[in-house]
Image (cartoon, rainbow over all chains, first blue to last red; front, side):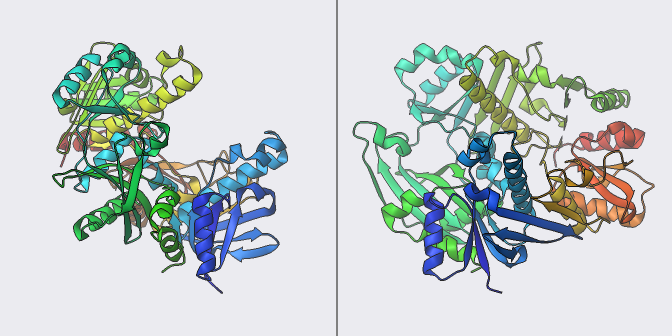
Length: 310
Length: 248
């Protein structure tokens, strides 16, 4: 039986499509668990004495779960699938959609093959300061951070550091902003909910993608506080290029990913002019397509090979 | 001081709180989930070297990071009634932010913390019953085969927490820091419980057994919220000893 890779999600989603393309180029057999076609998919598994076996029925064929070497999950929330919404929340189809996804996610947690990534490890960025403590354990510097609902100590923190930024601490995405004089007018609003402030770190942004024991680094040079949203601001140009990491930092990044239980991770670093290396956070399901398109680094190919067991 | 974090309806936790105080574990502070979620001041500092977090509760108590020697954490989830007046989107956002704050707080507290948080759960790593059965099998505990199919909308009368039919009597073995607190356990079950605790990486949890297809000690499920009362004085002594041991 040929080893197979299972891709889970929406086939046109860029990261999934890139990996599919590389699997095809490498002649590695693969299957796609297309969430939108949930009605045509069946999944079954059994656990006995710690061993897992089962079958996936898809497009009229039946596959043994033990034949998969790797699974790449880019699952969207099934409740947002158009086919689910169209079926009606109380319909039999909707119930099937729910149970199918539940069966899949249950299996992924116990599957013997490589799973990129399992749900437990993917949750570490639910809390950024929680994750920062894990990052720090692996020897990275983290920016001095204050999370509070007390405006007075924010003023002191601002005075102490001169330039500070603020951003969310949960997995809800926010645009990193520089704290400015005009923000003082609404600083009292933080009494309702603690807000994260950090010293501004000057330097070059570096995104490191780790896949197993491989790492690809991209530098992003920009004047914008949050380069992900550079296109939204005037003079928001960014320059990306392949960045050569030292062996020591490469190893540290791989160790960090392993410590977080992640086969594939996107690590956000900032390297200061004094060569200090700060780690801001680790993306546990990185959308790598932007970086691959900008630099030509073989991220998707490496991921495809990793999923095949190489 | 030590902390007991729980809901006011958590009778097993309140029983343990009273029992530990009676055994002389002082000062032991009871902090209800609602009291914690409606704290009035938060200060959380993180640097490359240190983490410091102080929380001021509405009743005037201040929980200083460096004054806590250990925690029994029974927080399953926190709700934030003070956010009810906000717009729905802002309310959801603020709730996520506050949960993320408490996640970091609990992780940063000096050990022992029973249990330390594992995102997205405040009280340790939550697992599907399928994963518990898998781990139990790896630990050598007797377990009946577990089956899951996308075609079974209501799988064989099983609950989401247990692998036995509803209503089946179970025996709970509470395991603290890798040691089952039940001196009457058969040796092989004791060893399996130890190994399961190690594989799960969970400090304090209950392992449930039933008279089932794999014998009188068939693995039935596991819970992060065992009824402490089942462990009796033996459990209180174990908890006291671990809490007094402090961070190692």
